[in-house]
Length: 551
Image (cartoon, rainbow, N blue to C red; front, side, top):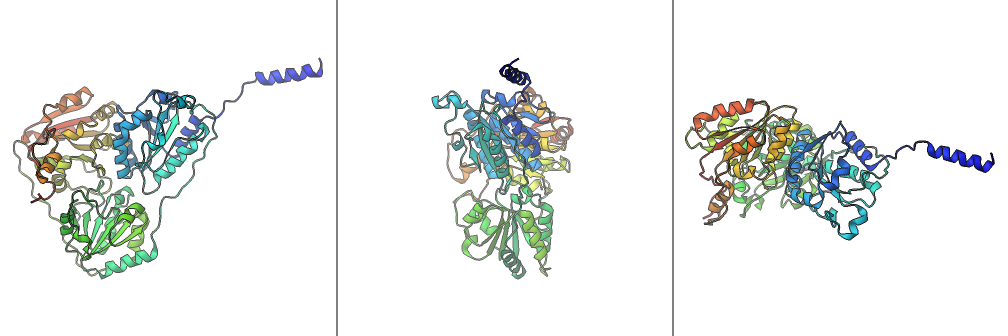
């Protein structure tokens, strides 16, 4: 055999050996999810996502939602319950468009989400291909913290890693990565997960100034916001409040419960009306806002709180919130180190503890069922460790009076004002709460925005009870039409919706209640049901005023 033939034989033998398969973008991504502790992916599949979904791994749970807004709402609730980023997979620009309302809510909720969406193959993008997204990374802006379509397939895992770190940095929020359909099979280098700290300590001089102001104050108030509960700092917040002997109020439109509402220092809920908020805080010479904007308003009016009668301090992990605060001093820090520092610096005070709010007497039963009676009955029937997810904006004042929340991890709602969040969010929260009961309190109008979320809950036999308050219309709009003194507004009535049939058609246990005498038994049965239950409660259609009526 010649030397040349021998070399050719060796080359052919080498080529005949099996070649090790290259590490792919998809493998690198799944390894990252595992390293980040992400065990569930929420999605609604489409053609541009099929390569990502094929041969799905057994150790990561794919949670199917029947519409993209519901998918994002579920991931949002799950992320809030677990305090880790939710991972979402949507279908190209069309699916992302369907989801934008709840992406905006996640942004306002400051919920960490990593959202991916499919994109057409890179080779046909110049031809304006069907299901392609032009300038995909611009679509969800400005309501994501980071948005990208990577320049190369090999860059996708690094982009997803950056999206996760960014989503988890306070203030948390959603991020977005657009992934072309053919990227998942391309070779990629594995990406090692890194430890990135998320806490930021307060400025010592600013904290000393706050402590001095508290020491000098005769009548201080603390306004607690949702960032306290998001940070898991509820116990610290109680200790700070008790050491300062300050009255504790809840910030307007707070989407979480950051202070136990039966605590003797709990004063109540601030209105989103400038005049009503200012009047509630008029007696205080110092107002310390912790974990909330200063302030979230919904209607016009003069905010005399900013006229200088009270000194204002703010502790926030959101630099943008600090930048727009119109008066006072802002301390930018994450909540746990800030409260720990404050607790350590505070001296004992000789101030008398304030007298908190008094709960109203139990409302009387009547037919049709008063909303107040429903709220009081539900509060008494719920298990002690249940979480409430709410979307009844027209009845929120009644809920705040008759359903005092216990504090940490007990209450969730949307910070955006956009409907269609709370039902899918309740599904995600139930998934993240390990079998403990979740209760979704929702209006009939709100429920129809994302009603298909019931199917996912039923398929998974979640410990979820949905209470639909049916007043046959958009109650909040009825209220605002009275406040604004506008008449003959179309589209406010919603007759003929049968929630029992809808729920049963999706696999849920369901019952309708129209008499007060039947309510207690129906709630008890629903809350004990092994799986998903729905109670449709027909209530008095009278509309409460959300704000003082204009003259």
